[in-house]
Image (cartoon, rainbow, N blue to C red):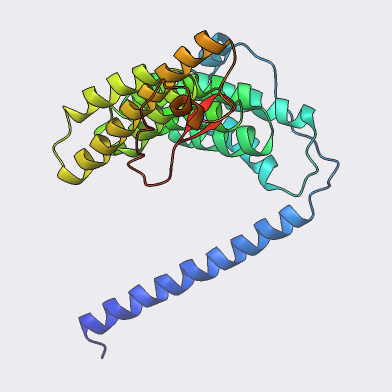
Length: 275
C-alpha cells in the first residue's frame, strides 16, 4: 500500500502535470487564434460618456474597466496593420477604462507602451497618464512617463522638468529624476530654478552617495549659471551671441572659464551651455 507521504507526492505531481497540459493546450489555441485573425479586422469602441459608463457598470466598474482595457490590448497584440482610426478607438477604450478605474496601473503602462511609443499619440497618452498620476499619488511611474514624453517626444524641457521634480519627491524614485529635472530646467533656460530645487532636495537626503551626486550637480549648475550671466553681459555689449565660450574670456567678461566637475569642458550649442 502507498504511504500517506507517497500519496500526497503522487497527487501533487499529477495535478501539476494536468495544469501544465491545460496551459500548453490553451497557449496553442490562443496562438492559433492570433495567427488566424484577419488583418482587415478593426478596433472598435462605443463612444459613451464616462458618467453613463459608470451608471451602466454599477458595482461591476472594475470588471468593465478590465474588459475595455483587455479589448484594446488584445487588438494591439494581434496581427493587425493598425490605422490611425484603430489607434483612436484604442485610445477611447483606454480612456473609458480609466474613467471606471483610474487606479489600475496596467492602463497607465499600456497607455505609455502603445499610445506614446507605437501609436504616435503622445498628447493623448499624456492626457491619460495625467489621470493616472492624479489618482495614484503614491506611485511615481505615471509622472515619470509624463516627464519622459514631454522631453523625448515633444522637446518640452520645462514641462518635463516640472513633472520630474514632482516624481523626485517620491522616496522610491531615487535621485535620478531630480538630477534629470535640474538638467532639463537648465536646458530650458531655468538654471536658477533647477539650482533651488536641487538644494532643497539635498537637504532632505540622508544617503551619502546620493548627497555626493546632488552636490556635484549643484556645483556644475552654479558654474553654468556664472557662464550664462556672462553670456547675457556679452549679448548686451555686442548685440549678438558669442560664437564660443572662449569669447567670454577674450572679451574680458570672464577671467577664465569655470571647470566642469564632470571633466569635459563646458561648450556652447545653440545658445545653451552644455556639460
